[in-house]
Length: 436
Image (cartoon, rainbow, N blue to C red; front, side, top):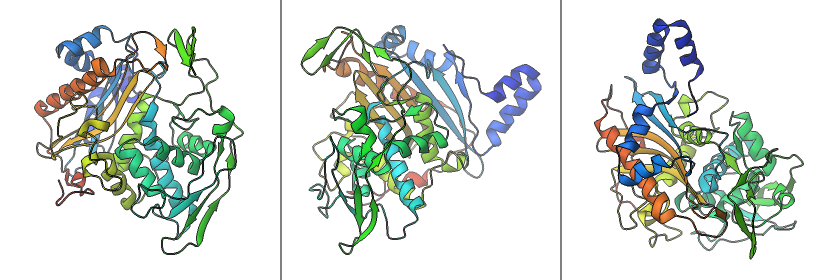
């Protein structure tokens, strides 16, 4: 297990018990300090003493490439949060494919870009036309899933958050452009994140470096308010080292009997994933460099669709999707479960190549508990990539379900210094007579 002590803890151990005591006092009284700890007495014990499946995954955690980051939250007398994190096998050197979990980044940075362009007429709801001028690109002039029948960044972000729509994420990728997307993350200190391609499209590295031209129009008239030319990224954001996984993979209809290389694929560490959620949910806990440049309206917009269920959604009608369609923690193993209104999961999941990820801020508005939880598990028994044969139903979904419930039960029993005020997260949804 890799040590994750932060600088303050190193200083405490170096200079003695006095500084350890002082650091704990600071932890409880600061606005937003955090520390990561490998703590076998918590996450390991929860799995060792958990369900048979949790025990089995724990015994085979290396095979399943399990990584877990759980963060407890305490509030001070002004409801300001402080954080204490517990890590299990968290290792940025152990690659996992983040799949759709990175879509929250496209959503947040697109809203930030709109704000920073400084065009008072350009809003997330402005309708847009997307051009096609390079190999692999597709144009968009209408959107049958939107109430207005017109595409907009607001509608794309809604779709990518509620049901993890791949095309919707790709449009945010194209709005930002590959270079700006990665530069913005690096500037914010997300050093273990690289975003190099659209999702669910078979495109070359060159095609993914080229992004579409697009034009935005006023809500009230067909008058252009912002034009963005086609963009090309000349820099290479792929890994400089090979990242081999598995023993074979499918390419087209051909079986290749060698590991699949992920060096050109997206990457994001468990720590960066949770940091994105934490920075969005608790913007005041981040420094100016890390914080997304979003308005209060932007935050409310993100919170709504991060937590909204398919059955609560209008335009499109997602009512045929189960509550757990994009909620793996606590409910991932039960397609018929109805998530109660007092439990809200603000998250983004990922599922591809045998990797299953959930990255969430979970609140119970009735019992006044809150916590952050991020986890990944790899289920690919035959070690063949891209064959569609993964143990999601048998292992991955039950693991996420039971891990989330184990942490939730722990939170129910955990003594808090103060009861948090969670009214901020009582939201009104598309189909909702009253706030939950």
